[in-house]
Each structure stands twice: as structure tokens, then as C-alpha cells.
Length: 262
Image (cartoon, rainbow, N blue to C red; front, side, top):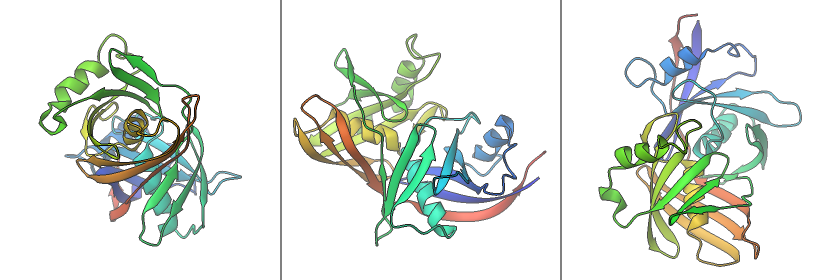
């Protein structure tokens, strides 16, 4: 089977994207997706997405982790698929699409920056000074003082495969607070089972747990290995997080055709 594909990246978080509006690629198997994401024997990516038609929406985002299994929400993936939709000729002032965690809105500004509206977050759990929350995907947040010299793979893996999270898995983020409005984040991602250059839902989770205004508007700049993202949100008096927007670049890297075994 010949598969036309496009490669996109958002702050170094890279994805294989496939236009599946014809439904030709509904039958991709876990093994085939894993092969396409393999960095030595396939195209190489942190995940794969299908852009599907969906009544009532501009499109549907179907996301798969690099291990070939269907994943939960991916923030950088969501931003990349919006830019992909634009390049396919789907031009909107504001995009409205559906993903595994529900509906999302998105915008592209004149500089090509993609802003994605994330789901509201009702609850943040605390555990021994760390934080656990779901921003479309489950995240574990651990504060760090020297995050750039941390062994993220070993420390992240030890939490992800601990007895509490081994079965379902969890993404692990290490966060250094620079000042009220700036943090540095490094992330170990489940499904990839390694550190990635950036994680959109992880960046969002880290920003929400490092707010500077007890209530009202917050704006946090987040530095990752692959670049800088911005998270804006409102924190209510009840500790809820609303109007959460994740913003940053999303770029097409290349396109091609690949043959995979049927």
C-alpha cells in the first residue's frame, strides 16, 4: 500500500500526518503505524495523525502514539493538524474540530502561530509536593531546580512505570520556575517511552500548576528543548482553570510517499 504523508513539527514534537478524508487509511494497523513512526526503519515521528471528515466539525483529529496505539489528546499535534488543514485548503477564521477528548477551537495568526483551546481543568491533585492533572492526557508534574541537567529518561521512566501508573501510564514533566511568567519544562512521554523535545498537554499542565495570579488571567511562557510555547488561562476562585489556550509555531517539514506492507 502506498501512503502519501506529510511531516510536521511543533517545537520539535514531530508527527506524520495523513489526509484520510477519503477513508482510504482507516485500516492502518498498530504495527504499520509503529513502523511509520520508527526513526530508523520508517519516517520517524513522536506520533501519527489522520485528518478525517466529521459532520458538524471542520475535521476530526485521530491521534496515535509512536508505539502504534491510539493515544489521548496531543496539544502540539492538535496545533500541527490545524496548520495541516490550512495547507489542505481548509481555511477558517476559527477552526472547530473534534479530538478524542472532545471539541477544540483553534486559530492561526498572521505570523503562522497556531493557538489551540484546551479543555477546562476542574481538579489538580497533589502528591508529596508534586501535581497530577489531566489536560486531555494525564500528567505528573515534579518541580525541579536544575532541570537542564536532570536525567529525564531515567527519572521519568521510574515514575511512569511505578506501581501507581504502570498499567495506564502517565506523562512525566519536570518543571523549573524561572520567574512568575517563565518556566522550563522537560517531558517523558508515555507511548513514545522517551523524552520528547516538547509536549503540548504537558506544557499546559506545567503552566497551570505554576500560576502567578491566584485568580483571574495568567500568561506563562514555557521553554522546552524544541522551542517556546505560551499558555494563557483564567483561574477561578474555586481553583478551576478555564479559557486555556496553548500557542506556538507549527511547521510543515516535508512530504512524500511511503510503501508499507498491506
